[in-house]
Each structure stands twice: as structure tokens, then as C-alpha cells.
Length: 486
Image 1 (cartoon, helix red, strand yellow):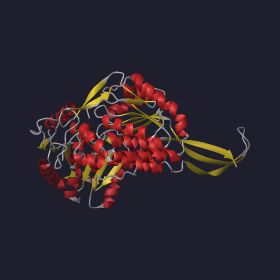
Image 2 (image 1 turned 60 degrees about the vertical axis):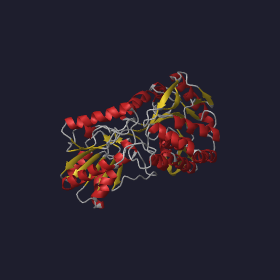
Image 3 (image 1 turned 90 degrees about the vertical axis):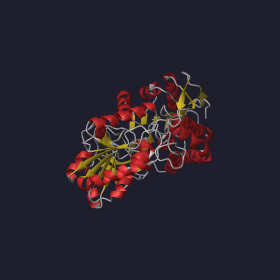
Image 4 (image 1 turned 180 degrees about the vertical axis):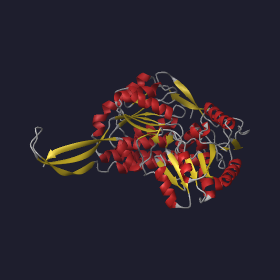
């Protein structure tokens, strides 16, 4: 794993112009490998290569695109034994999360978009009778709306699910006939480079897929700024997303921005309390809370508030924190020491604002190395507290009581975020009614499970646009109207 890797620009593997930087294992604090440090100039070169490859690739037959995407899925499965340990070492995810989500889901997504590449891209429209005008003679005008590729796309991904998130961008972008520049998160780019290597080997033409990496924002900002890039697809923090919108807006780029979240787990007094506790506890059990869709706010009707807090507190104290490779480990490390310190600062702020730390709140004694945070529950919170308003992105749940439906909905809607909320109630009619009042791009009812064919994205500061399933094709396309006389 310690080998140095390279950038792919225009079909050629090259060293980073600014050398390399080390990738650290968050569980062991040891070096996993060296990543290339791309210069801003190399990012420009990659964008130019994608632009130059676009005319040819955009005219490639859907059958050929589907063949290459399916070959990528097969290659991922063939190399899963190499990819999986690398992903676990880079991200610190548990072996369970790695085996279930990190690598297999990437192959599944490429399989899906191999099929979607064959979907019709033309929408027939009814003819319209138009009178003669100064513009043109009258007649019956036929028309179609055609989905056309956007152009060269910068795909910029977060550190929590590096390979599967990138697959969710590359699949629809390439299926639609776009070319791409891949820019993975600085903390864990190695498995993404390996993914690009597999795609290069299965036969994607030069320039269709390029990859640049770096430890600073320089190469990413260069991609957002250059006129060679037509669209930016970004998943990550709201702060970075706002910067991308600002810089990319100067050249009228298209955006798909999936940003931060502060998920509400709205628990009514007729809910199955055990189920609600189990679902909300996924903040701790699923990648140490480093997921934007997590229900990090337990907003609980007062009649069952104590039951929910007690259930969450008991669960937090029995979840094993430790080595991601051990099969009984539930909570692995967070990505960096700096992020651990940030999470701990939020816990201190919660205490200072009057919250009660029911579980966690202290750094685990073991393991004695790695960037670990104990599953933490802060109860007796108010909706206006810092820990209830800002995204923490770690294994921390805040519990907030409410009295009636109106108040519960108001608390759920009280943050700047609107990515994924959840409603727990035995009355599915009420749950559906409440879901319509939530200012959130996604709502789960009595579950935190996902449907990957559903449109996915946020409202407010949680982002712009939707992807997922067939909607991913829409996100990476422009509508082109074609009109002719019948």
C-alpha cells in the first residue's frame, strides 16, 4: 500500500508537479501510502483534456458506454480484495461498513448506469399549430426535447465514502456522454486513483476520465474556476459548496451540490420507541456519524422523551469503539486528529450551553492510538443551541423535547439545513402529513434505510440539484429542444 501513485491526465500517468503527500490511517496513525500533489496547472491540463475528449465521447454509442460501465463494475468485483483493505485503511470505516457499502455499492452503481445508458434520451412533444408571423410562415410544428450531455464535469467527492460516492458521479456523467475530471477528497484519494486505473484499463478513451489529487484546495479550485469545465458535481461541506457556487458562478457552470445536513429524527408519542432508538443510533453505528444524512437531532415528544433518551444512553454505552478490522467493532475512528478535536469542541459547547452529556463526551481510553470519539448523547437541549444548529459530522446526537406536532415540525425546520429528516409514528397518515411540512429534500418514515432509485439532494444550505437512479441522468444533462415543420 505504501507505493506512490500518479495522476491521469489525457490518458497519461504522470507524477504530481508538487511532489507527494502522505495519507494517514485514522485507526493507527500510520502512513497508508503517498498521493500525488497536483499543481493548479495540472488541474487545468486535466480539464483541457476532458474538454478535448468531449466531442468524440459525446457521440459514442450508448451501447459502447454501457459496455465500458459494465466492464468497470466487473473490474471492481474482480479487485475487491485489493480495494477493500485500502478503503478501510484510508477512511477508518469498520470492516462491516466496508464490505457492505464502500466497495460492493460502487460496483452496483456502475451496473445500474450501464443499464441507464441505454435509456431513450428523447421526449416526444405534441405538435402545435402556429399562425404565420413576421418570424416565419405558419404551420404545424413538431418538436422533441432531447437530453444532451453538459460537457466536461469536475467530480469532487468527500472523504466518508470515497469510492462509492465517486461511482455515483462517474456512472451517470459518463452514461450521458460527459467527460470527467476526478478530484477525490485530500484525506483518502488512493482507492479512487485505483478505481480510475481500473477504468483506464477496461478501455475508456484518453481524456474521458482524468484524476488529480492534492492536500490543499488549489487543484480543486482551479477546476471550479477554469472555463474548460462546464459542470461541477460536489459532495461535501456547505462551506466548500458555497465557495464552489461563488467561483463557478462566474462562468455560469452547472451545479450538482450535495452539502451538509442536520437530520431531524422526529419521534411522536405513538412511535415504536425501540425502533426509533435503533434508527437514530445509526448516527453512532454507521461510520462514526460521518454521514450527512444522519438523524443527529432526536426531536422527541415529551411523553416518550425520557424513554428515548434512556434507550439511546444505554445503547451508547455498550457499542464497541475500536479497531475497524475486528468483527465486533461498531464505532471506528473519525478521519483526522483535527476533526476529532472539532467534534470534542462541540461537546464542550453543548455542556456550556446547558446540555446534559448522558453518554460519551470523553475521549475513549482505548485504543490508545487513532482518532476516536466515543458515541455521545447530549440531552436537555434547546433548538437554538450551537450543537442543535450546526453540523458536527461525528458520533454525537442531541435530544430535544417537544409538546405538539406544530412545535416538533418547527424545531425540525429550524436549521439552515434540509437534506434528510425522519418521522417516527404509529400513525402513517400523520407521518405522511408531517413529511409534507418538512423543508427537507428527503424524508424517511419509521426507517433510516435508503431507496437508491429515489431522487436525492437537499434544500436550503444542504445543496442544489438531485441525483440517484434515473434522476442522475437528468442531473448530468441539458435539455435541448428540436423543432421542425410537419
